[in-house]
Image 1 (tube, rainbow, N blue to C red):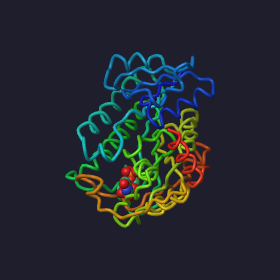
Image 2 (tube, rainbow, N blue to C red):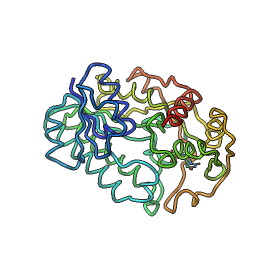
Image 3 (spheres, rainbow, N blue to C red):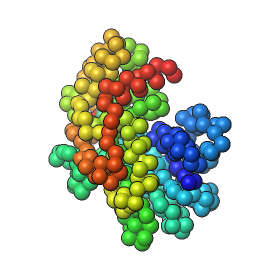
Length: 317
Ligand code: UDP
């Protein structure tokens, strides 16, 4: 099979490329980012990177024409972007998704769309099943532009599905692992990682009682491969996550313990990390029944084990 992965040089995309190549399939990654995360694949005969934007219509069209399956992962991701550059988030995520779906529709090629648990927003009724309400704050808060952009992408997916295109929507829950963002940047695991490896205090925002279900990348990738293969998944939105819920304070404590570090865990106000336009989500927990039933996948890597592997990987960098 010839698999096109937009965002294939990114964090989840690079692991997904590894998984398809390991099955003996061919992978083309379309990505604007430098190819650092797929450097190990440079000599692989089944792998190719095209350095361009999903908004480059001619290049996208040519790549979709040659693919049997399209994963659309290319997006502007990370809270620092939501609050720092909402224009890019909205443009790339909404228009990029429309472009990919339009090209795939022309060739009747199945699309798996990477959406996010962020679409549920700050709904306080957990666990979130796939039909749960979306509860977002005011548009004056930049943070919500990402959830809005991904929800618009999902609506586009379902609109194309109505016209007959096979699509699957995956909502990822805080995926982490080797090759996540650069240390000190992006998501909480990499921000804590930089602090941890320098022996500095880990900066928990607020009281740290907010919770997440961190999902090890190998588990997320098994679900993502299954979504590309299984006919039962077509036309559905599916949560991809672990249901092991931890508070952010507990996450920090575990990282310190696993790394055997002397770092302290301190509480900071949100302005110490994000300038403005930030609003936190109190609890985020997936219902995982649909993932189990439609994809045949359950999260298998416990948080401690996943953190141990991730810390080891960052130490080696
Ligand atoms: N967080 C934190 N300290 C930091 C960065 C983030 O306590 O230095 C918290 C953040 O407030 C949130 C959680 O970690 O509650 C996860 O944040 P992240 O940006 O990774 O993703 P989110 O799940 O909010 O999209």
